[in-house]
Image (cartoon, rainbow, N blue to C red; front, side):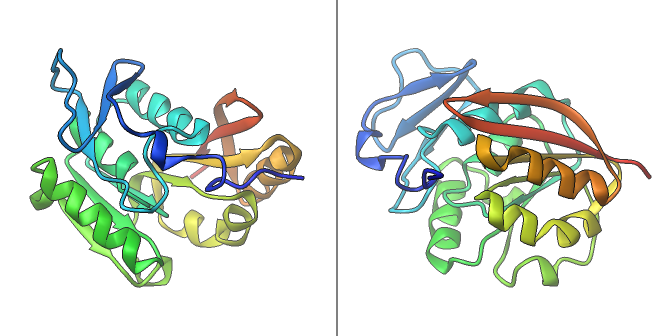
Length: 205
């Protein structure tokens, strides 16, 4: 049986600063003793995205490797962790999208907590409301949802864009990869941790 993303992340354990490939994450009021410019103060607020889950870590590690882009679309943003980290890494603006109103509220509060509100746009109406194309898109969601929204994700990719997907358990890896390849994307770097996978795709246009 495929593990649940939410069940595999225990937000109660997010009680001390920790580091992912040089990027610090810490709960409110518990900043690391050694401060750097790369890091976020987060209140998970009962939604997914403290940084404890392997899929979030894989996405963040890939974002750390990519050069800055003009804008990022974060689909299923949760706490906002990936979009806000991208802003810290030099991306100019971020659009945060989630169908859970609570997640958007938490993400907006985390943006404010880190002084990033002016560079963030909240999109409450889902992918159907997104009319523009992006140079970078990230989605950390269960495989079934990634498959369902694949055509909509393709629609918002700009020429030469990076699409970073995670939330993919090994049993669904080939199916997810095949769906996106059949829609005209080329496979980029792939990474894995504890049975979870992160895939990068590039449009062929």
